[in-house]
Length: 344
Image (cartoon, rainbow, N blue to C red):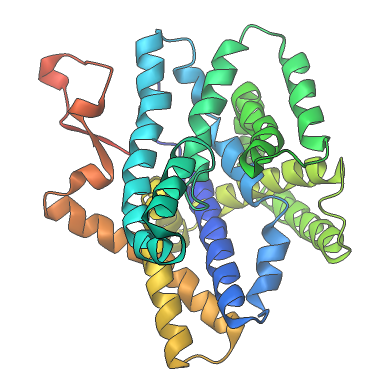
């Protein structure tokens, strides 16, 4: 097992989390203001690949644990994510509770919590809620021929949405990318090596991809069956190529790597600085331009969680971002047993 981190993977995760935070920040501002800003066009451009690349990257290293004993697998791929989901569900609910109680009463607010716990996760947490299920399915089908599983997963992505619960639609439409990250990891790493060896060709390819992706988005066709699948994988490849190229730079690469290595920190906590910054800007009117307001909220939503993490690491609140030993199934040797396990 390779213990060191892969630079371009961290950069890719950094890019992914920025696009996810950007989407939530921009849509939140536009919903409150009732207008669409220029950042909305950036969010629309990223829509075809924003979540496909996140899931593909998430599946890259599953092979390291998928064949381990059930206790180890469950600890690293199920309990790990559910710990952070449950913890941050409670934290988010604490901030939402006053508004929910005022609108639906105590009973209605409690029902919202139960629904988020078992049925429909809060919008900013559904990614880590669904990852354990994806990993479990891959483990169960790991001996089934890869072409068959991939074909079924692709059909599920192509099939029209419309299931009773939105999370089920997300489940069926995203699994193909997670499985591809797991099943085709050697090819993906080989592609990254080719990008590093031929950066000029990679830049040209990225330019062509940007034109194609932008054209389909502008035409309103990016979500059509088959096209969404193709654009999802093309966009994921573009993120991999961009990550390799950015990783070769000094300062941008270092920033992106740091952000990627702490991407789950940002994902868990960005709702708080996002909500605070949006409220301040909207109520004060300091920034009248909706697009610029969305950009400021996005930046604050990326930096804010890192500040919260820094404070937590120094004030005895490590459990917010690092899983404590009591929340583990896997029991390493006493001499090597850490008190906390990082969220990443």
